[in-house]
Image (cartoon, rainbow, N blue to C red; front, side, top):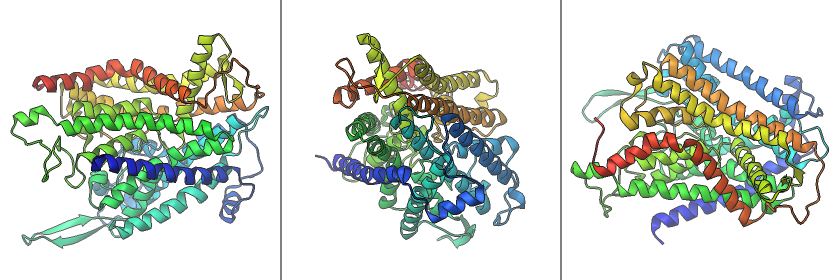
Length: 568
């Protein structure tokens, strides 16, 4: 076994062990009868009745309206930046379209940045708007997963829980403690954590250079634990202040995968169906390993055009070989590939290399993972998205054997499938619809650093990243225009709420149904066969939906690269 393979095995083994511990804790968080002191205080301040029981409509409405208010608060802070304290660099307020895009980005757990954080935002804005919305967006996703799982677990009930209780418990018991501990480790590893904005250093040549920093460690902790992704610096996790050591790189990866993987254990614990939970975990893992192998192989194979230009891409004792364009030498191909696969599988958006410099096939991997949107996925919503495919899978299997499909002991009826398909179709409709509009928009060409297939990939990646609530980008694309700020902002909102709310309705529908005793014709879902069928359905539905778009971008670009042709 090679060292890099061993590194991957150890990382995924650590993820699995941590998922078990965290999954059980999250399950206890959602089922505990007692309220902590800080939770009770939060209820009093906000006027919440923790004893109230909500149906899916009220639960979803509380989620939607609270997120709208928090987005509005973030927008106001961004627009008022020029009057806020801790702004030593005198950064002005964001323009209305950019502030809308930023507020929508961070409340939807996307964290797309059409600006350079270190030169555009003050420390006050980084904390009051960016970090605040990072906590809110991530906590909302996990709370929604709690209500969703509770709905699947119940029978003959109109209730899925109390959104406010779920939100406060996730915030006080999961997000804040985890982020506090991780932030301390990050500070120990050399990340800045200060209210100062900059310092002046004298270089070896005697010149004076301003070095920007701020409360980086606290932002980085929720950035990865919350599968957020927006960086304090424009170089994101490739910047030494955001990712100074191999240990921080490993912690970034484990943090991104922690909650998405743990929710499969939470599901199995809350429903007393642990085997079913591991089937879902296995489906996540199979897809992730497949995409990781693809991106590693593509990048380690290198770019033949660079070889023609005289670049040495051989693997030797002195260099990692392969396509090192846009990558950090300290991470090399293997760690970069693992980070690329992780950040788009968990829809985080944090990057330790420039995705725009990946080979065409390597760049197709993050695109494909975001298009599927359920290869682990973001905090809460990734698991919910996988369940939508699980319901679709049992529906297709039920139709093949001529029986009413059943899932977790509940009959899947026409209304449930309509809601599932609304969620399934909203995702590609936003991606492909906005991409088509952008390709026809007359000013799009001025935002592209490349034309031809790669230019199309840049546009496609932007709307895929926004709709999947990922936030990473092909960096050669300038998205800070009124058109792109507005349309990508709308894509982020559609991708978040037009997929999440229909599935909450499905959970409410299943909660109201009686449990059906499994019979000889019931298709078992806690088996390796179902795991394989689930992965097959995810890949086929995603492939059929997005293959034409991928063919116009990275696939044709890969063929051009292999043939030695460069688009002028």
